[in-house]
Image (cartoon, rainbow, N blue to C red):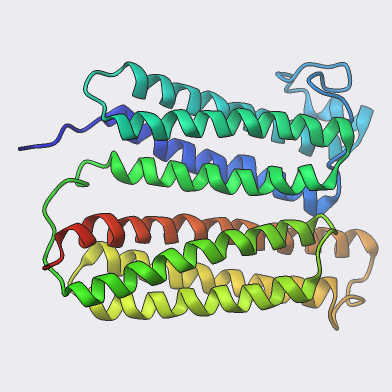
Length: 308
């Protein structure tokens, strides 16, 4: 029997992934890299102004460039919240939507609401632990949105090829381990970015996580050679992971390593370090998103069609 395709659920989930990663997390990462998280010490008002103000030049002249970055982050976060509110509403009020999809959509909305409250607490209390939880919560939103985007895709319920059960079980295990390690590593990375963690701990976890993901990529390309979707995801994951590792190495070199004093002036050094740290963060979120998509394909589609 042909399964229903909920077009707007899928579109909103995809848009949510793009906006959350590209805008909300991207600008939020820039805030942490530039250390302007307290440019606006007020909430919900913006130093007495409106969230919907678009007079960025005036904001910069009055409160400094950091306030513009913080202001646009709050606007991007509001856009993400609106998209996920529409997503949850569409899931709840569209006839025939399965209970599990409704639960996922509502869970995503509740986490976004919690994210807003954590963001407010971080500003009002200037608490680093809250800032770390706020950063990790954003990754959880991405994970749920990717799962929703996959499960509402038009081809999600189509039959897949049969593959060897031992190979499927092995890769299902490694993909699950990769996701768990990614979240632990993201917590240590957020702690380090907020100057509450040790670089050595993040480095060890990063090497361990990267090794597991590389092994997962190799196994996926070998076991599912004829599966175009998995091959594409595995190769994309390899490219993004390589870029993230390169940016991480560069960020270390300029922040802590031998190239700390290589810039001609403080402004250039600050901009370069902010760019490298934010790029490293964004690639890490993309690694999480693609790993989640690969896990979904292997665990739920291929796994369900494996010979027993």
